Amino acid sequence: MSFSEETVLQAAPGNLSSNLEDETVILNVDKGVYYGMNPVAAFVWQRLEAPSSFGDVRDAIMHEFEVDRETCERDLAALLSNLVEAGLVHVHRQAA
Image 1 (cartoon, rainbow, N blue to C red):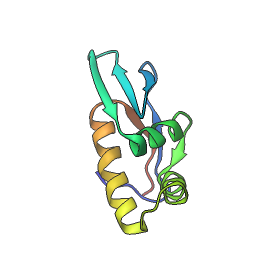
Image 2 (cartoon, rainbow, N blue to C red):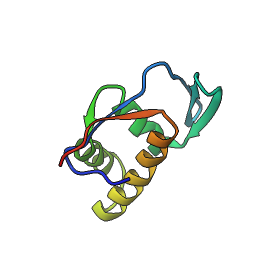
Image 3 (cartoon, helix red, strand yellow):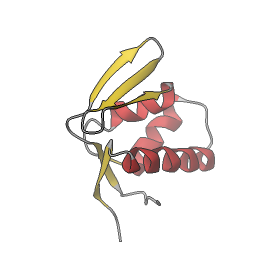
Image 4 (cartoon, rainbow, N blue to C red):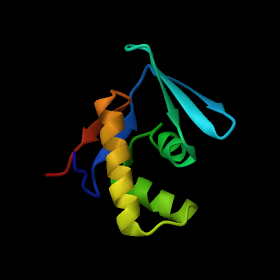
């Protein structure tokens, strides 16, 4: 899945999440499956509690962590694709 700068995403409602030490654990209630997130993925998850654009999330990651833009965009797109596929994140608006 590809995302443009303006693609708006949000965490899907109905999932439960909790912080455990240095990671976040999310329960997909519908599927009964737990997902563990490392600190960067947990940072993204927090940003997606409200609708956020791909560009805004990318910029927040680059501000918080030492990562170049190309690596950040590639890794963020892969993470978001996995979260969308797992039903944990919804795409609200995809730019044309």
